[in-house]
Amino acid sequence: MIIIALTMYGLGWFYDGLLKDTSVGIQSMDFFLLVFSTTLIAAAGNIINDYFDRKADRINKPERLIIGKFVKRRVAILTHVLINLFAFSVAAYLSWKLETFGYVFIHLMTINMLWFYSMYFKRKFLIGNVMIAGMTAMVPLLVGFYYDQSISSGALEVNNFNDGLTFISAKIIILVLSVALAGFAFIINLGREIIKDMEDIPGDEVLKARTIPIVLGIKSSRWIVTVILTLAALFTILLVLMFPRIGTLGFLSIFAAGALVIVAIITILLGDTKKHYKLANNWLKLAMIAGLLTPVIWRLLFYYD
Image (cartoon, rainbow, N blue to C red):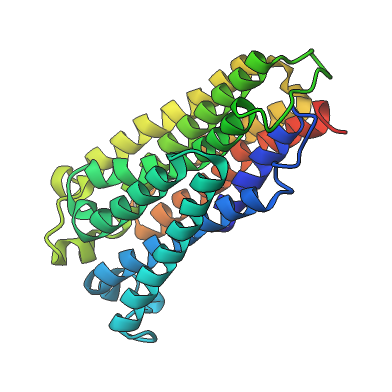
């Protein structure tokens, strides 16, 4: 939840640096509501995921079991429904206020995808991994959509400071950076999801899941993760090439992300225990944070007021 909120505000802060009028930027109530509703949906997704994973979690993570132990099942499902209703109401308000159906569509799609993922697709070969990675990638895209709509509607003026940005060039920067960060988040999280499946084999077998590690085995899964994470490391090089003016600190941030991904790869290749998989997962979380910090650093270097 914290990473989602920080990602959205960090990226929004960078986009604010492109614009004269930041009244609809990160200081606005509309942007806060967008971040708030997005994190609420993610929270509800965690609840429903834990709800359907009770049997597996008794084996895989007994110390982290909440539903059925500290919280009654009916309370959990009611909380999930209420949180989603509130988040969807916020999305409906934003769609009405900003005159676009996009927020209703995205939020409704995400709510349903998280439900079906937790209930069914999580235990299917690959598709569950792709779904959750895709929903994670939606976070920077959602911020880009918000600013793109704000510019297109005329609510924001483009700043001619720095390189003399125009209406078109500002929209291109927003599109390219949002898609680039979404791509990085997708690849990293696809690898993370497979690693988490490697951790959770005992419980998933109880549920008769058909995850990649169960179907193909640990050895093949480790090599699949290695290929995916190698793509993530190469993606950091692409980010540097796409944004050559990112500066020394920006380069170091992206370099740190790539280095952490490589450390995770080494951890997966050399380790074969649940402890190693957990460690690799944590390295990837740090890599995501380092990569998503890049727009913040770029704003500090080039677009400060």
